[in-house]
Image 1 (tube, rainbow, N blue to C red):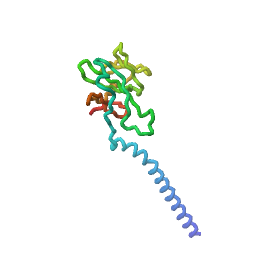
Image 2: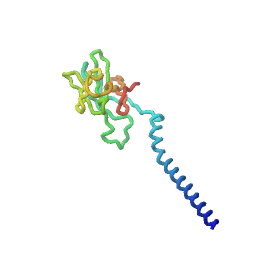
Image 3: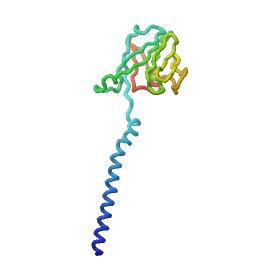
Length: 169
């Protein structure tokens, strides 16, 4: 009888340790993607590439123009989601400035209202001045800016994933 009790207790201990080990192993497996998602932004540098968006002659002085380009991190499988857009202004002093076409509130596309000289988000009423600063509505910060340059007669934008903050060179 004592021997049966010892075998039973031994079996119970084994099954308890086995189930705890199996549960721990499952927890580790479930935690790997979570830890990866937390660590990945720290070790993965965002890819940025200069993309030509037009010739210098395509941008009149004082004009704000919508340009479209392919994202830097897009794969062949991305289809239309590989495309992005930005607003490029050729200032009257000859300097270029480039704003993201996405509102800083929820990422909706903004449009340029030439007569009012304002960027407007039709979704939630966000309004930005021509320098990209918030004029009204819910946006928490100014429009994000892309780096821009003129090289060999072409206007180029330094692409990045949809920016939520200012992108610098």
